[in-house]
Length: 200
Image (cartoon, rainbow, N blue to C red; front, side):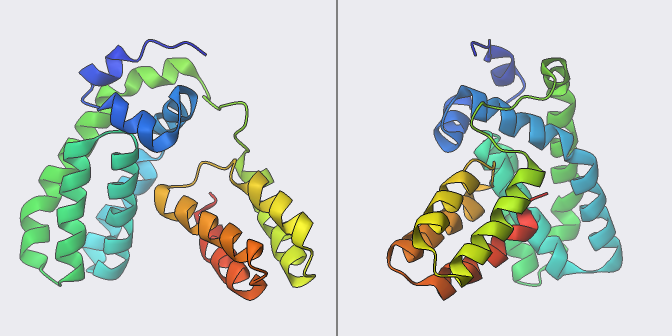
């Protein structure tokens, strides 16, 4: 699929960084589309956790936003979310109060600039699997691991690689594949259970 990506540079994204993280133009556009589509949900979470003083879940959310922003080449925004994550981890509510609103405004400004992504519709690379297939595959993978079915487990793990995980979960899945290769099924199962909640 040939796409003119120059408008993404104008929107403030480092396209080369994004393509390097995602592994190609189609996957990159898919990641940008998901980043755009998840704005309302993520902004709502940040607002809710700030309002409740729930800095543990706030930290988890801004960590994910940091990774997602980095994955699409939103370097400045990723750095801002990283500062908020560090502040939350350290219990530094003063930094959060000083920087959260500005960061969320930068986030909204980027989303506004990415509005043309709507015209591309539902961007999905040919080898990308949808959420329902990923959930079913993960469940089948856990069953295969319970049954010590090495060949099926490897096949299902490779299929699950087709889901557009964030970088952290993708690295964890690669680690699980390594455990399967070493016949360490319990360790692989533990990792799969950890990444299932990110299939959404």
